[in-house]
Image (cartoon, rainbow, N blue to C red; front, top):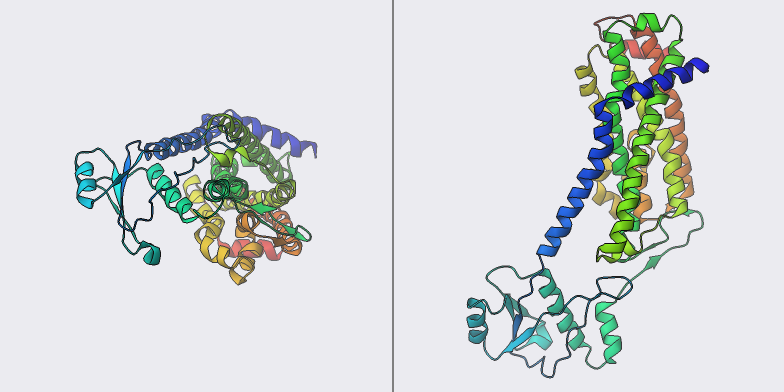
Length: 412
């Protein structure tokens, strides 16, 4: 056991000294931050402050109620500025104002609006999203003119539907609403991060075997360490390395959430929370899933004679991880259907699928238990297989193991 931890410690220190490790720790969160920043500025650039006109051919907006302010902050201290809404008697007047750039667009309400709800939008360049939202609120609140004005404003600007389900015997987020939508996406985001982590760690996992196999140092190492201790120690070292990466990314994510909640005018960041039951389920599934992938990739490294060849073979394990993302629509349409159950219990796609399912739906506990049991069995089997394949392939310098050799190892 002491030699096992010595190998793990050596593998950890060796890979932490590589420039690629530092780049992976800083590069991923910086890239994500740049994407979020760019997206934020793109959304902000969609807003335009020029007035909006309208032509009311139906007389629907006579003595109209003004559009309500939309809140841009959860505590209600900040409000979106309302654009001037200008009424025109004829479409010719509105068109002249548009051509002279006095307004960014104008709406034409048809004469039979009360029966058809037909409204036409006319513009030269697309109006800002704030303009279209405001005019929508303006029309909706005037449809509720018979209600109490305060109730009508709340119905238009503050409506928030929450869906909740019974938490007994199921795993999943306790509710879903527009103000907690980011909470529901956290498990799925974690599943995608898990796949990225596997992809980044694959180089360490395969390189840990291929490099020493190629430079002929294996013969010296195995004279004092058993194949099981050597392979197990290497996998343990890479797992600890990956946990350090994940911890650093999580720290960046927490800092981003704290800063975003304080400064960004987005309600979804104000209610950011992690549900313990969901987080515990994801963690319990992630540990055996990562060990399983580590064993599989180490096996690939033991089979290959070159690093490039090992990289090509490793893609066979990455594609199943992404299948639940590609088949997101059928999974969401039937979360307990045959496709969802197969992907949940198939080891290579199990973790990502379960992350998608617990994000939006209630998942029976026995589904989680079966998926976790399969992952544990596969994790133990993959590490065992990696050590066995390494044992028969360590002295085959410049040669790649064939599939029939792997079958012979598994049968023995």
